[in-house]
Image 1 (tube, rainbow, N blue to C red):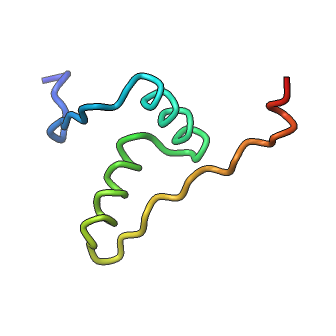
Image 2: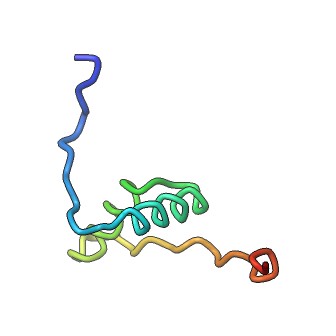
Length: 67
């Protein structure tokens, strides 16, 4: 099937739209995506061998956010 996913999809409840959008922007800034960061966090959280917590992207330049 053309639209079949290789992996089962999981649902995360309780994440509001702003959190979802902020996570999307942060993962893009780090050169990754929400799924990869989520898997990496889960693997670190359950202490899988060799797992490390995901790295956050650098903070934006405060001067560029001044209004």
